Length: 350
Image 1 (spheres, helix red, strand yellow):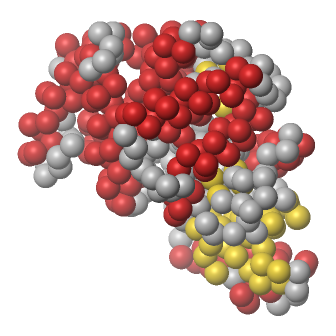
Image 2: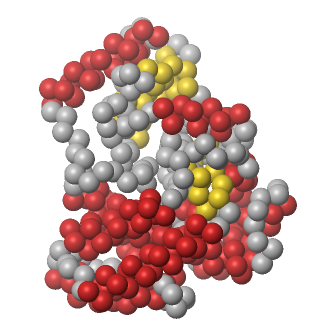
Image 3: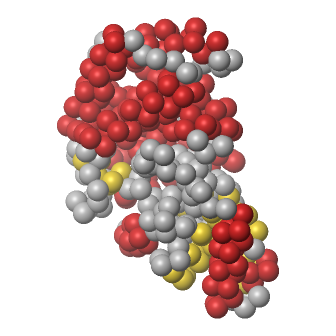
């Protein structure tokens, strides 16, 4: 699960081995308040791109998930508040059994270990995605007015990760004056488009690693603590133009039409012109993918998580294909073309 909420530049997880051992001891003591000796069964449950860690324990009441989110590095209050809001709207999310915000510990229901990424295939995708966008529609019908706004400044900050981390750090390249002007113009066009879309509840990382298969009320939705009020097409772009899985353009078009029809039937404020919505969907994807490229580079180079580089070519492919379709976005494709030579010099190909 990667957390799209941009991390302030330079923030590092500086916990030493000693402090890690102290935190583990504190976590086990906290667990044993509720399930004596269950801390002895503590085992890693999943990886995360943030500073949160997840563990599974065995209790007399079955397995549970323990979340460890150091308060100095992660704010867990949104997880609690947004989780309750989603659960009240019949979206399946982890039930919070116990929480200690001061220490950053939570005891959650165990929703299993089958992520969408594990079971998506050409045979299963139609049904799984229909379940996913039905859950998304439930979320988008919520009152999002109290959530942080996906503001122009926030969108710009996210896209700037592309320049800083992918171009500057990963490729060790310097953008020309012309490149910087092109990027400035494209970013402004994207911000204008996304700002003018209907603004709804936005999960922000609605993809195959944050959806888990559930026998009832599928899917279970996780990693929602970064939710904001933002453009209605964004989460669908996250879902269908997923950084971790490929689909044909024909499939993407078909599923987007099906979501659009379902969302309009549910009363969401979507344009009656599908072509207009599809352009919004594609432009939201470009804004997101500029961010994701930067985040994957940052995870590799700052946070020592190089596996995220394996998925960079897929996201760059989304950017290249989509930006060639729209004159206002085409400079991104040209910049990527110009960066190809530099990428070969550092041993990386798109």
